[in-house]
Each structure stands twice: as C-alpha cells, then as structure tokens.
Length: 119
Image 1 (cartoon, rainbow, N blue to C red):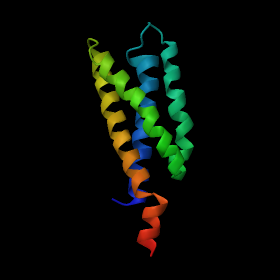
Image 2: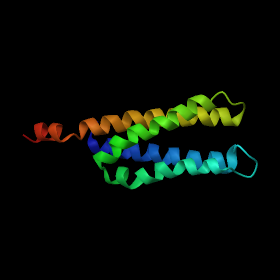
Image 3: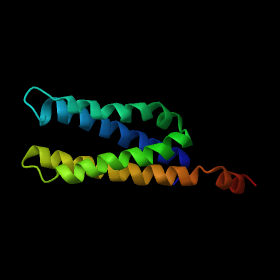
C-alpha cells in the first residue's frame, strides 16, 4: 500500500474516531443525561488531525501511543449494556485500525526506507 493511501485511510479513521467520541458523549449514550465532560476525550485526537492530514511522520509516531488509550477505553466500556457497549466496541475497532494504519505509515515513510526506494 502506498504512503498516500495509508495517509488517506488514517485520516478517515481519525475523523471517524473523533466523530464517534463527540457523538457518543454528547447525544448517543452520554454518562449523564444531557451530555458529559467525557466529550473532552476527543481533544487529544483533534490535536493530531493537522499532522495526520499533512502526513507528518512524527505525528503518526505519537498517535500510535495515544490511540492505545482509546482502544483500552473501548475494550473496558464494551461491557456496558445497550448502545454504550456497542459504541465502545466501535471505538475499540476504530482505534485498533488506526493504530495499525499509523504504525504501517510510520514504517513505510521511514527516511531509510525512502532512501532505498529512491536509489
């Protein structure tokens, strides 16, 4: 898979994860009726958006560590009943896919790999 395709897939996954976090905590199944402060969990992901959009390798590297927190939250909250549990599973799946895509992007876009391909 090309660097450009990986960048596009990672951007789509990141936007989907941000949207899920906001919708989940604001309207779909918030911890408290009317929304909760948990909506702020989307802020760190938003901090990575521009870097991922521009294809910055460093952003991908720290995003791999950050997205693991969302994977853990999704796995833990998947035990919740009803819609919250299903949303948690969706969060875990999106986070796992984003993690894999970010690791793959960081590996493919490594300067040493680019030098070998260009030579």
